[in-house]
Image 1 (tube, rainbow, N blue to C red):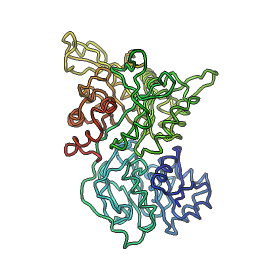
Image 2 (cartoon, rainbow, N blue to C red):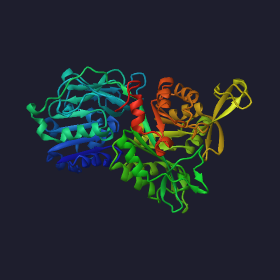
Image 3 (cartoon, rainbow, N blue to C red):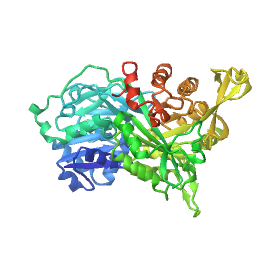
Length: 527
C-alpha cells in the first residue's frame, strides 16, 4: 500500500491514476498518523520549495514526516518532494528543508532564477538503484522544474540529466529516494519507475542489479497530438479539423471521432503530449458545462503524458450576472486531470493592455494561473496571419522576409494575431504578443499559422524562427504538417522544442509512430 502525501495546488489525481494503472493501491495522507503508519510514503509537489514546506507546517505534518525520514523508512519524493530532503534553498533561506541529506536547492539557470525547464530528457545513472531495475537506459522522462537539488556528497546523486548543464535527476540512498522528473507524466518509463518503487522485493541488494551509464541524457524534441473539439448537432463534443479554421462541411461540423478514444490511440502510438482544444469554448460556461471536464477526467485515467486543455479559459460574467474568473476554470480543469491550460483570444486582450500601460496588473488570467500553478502550466495559443508589405518601414511591427512573396510580389510580411476563429484582426504582431505573454508569466507558446493550416505544405519556418528567437520559453510549432519530412525539417531549421500534428493523424495519413521512426537518428526523440 502506497501512502500519498500531496502538496501544492495541483490535484493528486494524476498520480493516483498512475498507481492504479500498475495495480498499486493508494491512500491519501491527511494526518500525521497516516504518515506514521505508512508502509511506503510518496510525497509529490510541483509547488515551490518554500510553499511546500509552509503547507506541511500548516497541515501539522512536518514533524511526522521528518521523523519518518530519519527512521530511514521507504520514501519517494517527486518534484519538490525530492528537494525538501535537503538543507536549504539558496533564494529562500528563511525556509529550511528537512536536512535528511546534506545539500542545497538552487535555480536550474543561475542567470534566470525563475526560468523553468519543461520537456523530455534522458537520465544517466551514476549508481545502482532499484528504481532503475529493468530499464534499458535510453528512456526519456518528463521534467518541469525551476530548481535543482545539489547533494553535498557525490554518492547521493544516483542519476543525472542534461536539462541544463548536468543536474541531478535521481537522488537519495537505498530507502529514501527523490526524482526530479514527474513519473506519472512520463509514459511507460515513468510507470516503470513507480512500479519499481512499489515493488518491495526489489529492496534487497541481491534483487537490485540496477545499471550505470555514460550515455548523454540530452533533452528530446517532442510531438504533440492535437484534437480540436466542437459540439456536433446533438451537442456532443467531437474531434474536428478545419481547413484554414473552417470546420464545417455541408453546414454541419466535420466529425472525426471521439476525443478520448482518439487521444488514447495517439498516446499508445507514442505521442509526447496530448492537447484538447475546445475551439468554440468562448461561447460556453465551463463551470456549468461538464463536457470538457468529463473528457479530461476520462483521458487522465488512461494517458500518462502531459495533457493540455484550451478553449474558453477567461474572465467573464455568467448569465446569472455572477463573475467567473479564468483561475476558477483552470482550477476545475486541473482537478479533473489537466496538466496545462491554453489561453487563446483572451491572451491578446491581456497582452495589449500590458503593452498599453507598461504594467502588470497581477489579476489577468495569465498572471493569476501562472502565480498559482506555475508558468509551466500556462500555454498561450497564437493564431497569426501573414500581412504582406513592400518594405519593413511600412508598418510599426516586426517584419520578416516573405517566402514565397505576397500576391503583388511583396518581399516582406508581418504576422497579425487573429481572434474569433481567425476572422478578426487585432493589430498586434505575433512576436510582440509572444514577448508580452512571456513577461506576464506564460510558459509555452503554441504557435499556429492560419496561412498554413490545412495546406499540408509544411510549417511556416520564418514565423517559427522569428518567434522562437524572440522568447526564452518553449515554442510548439503548429499548422501545415503534411508528411513526416516536415517534422525533421522544422526541427533542423528552427529551435522549436515541439511540433504539433492534427489533421494528418486524424485522417490516418501519417501516424505518430511514422513520425518518430523518421526522426530517429536525425534528432533526439522519445521512442
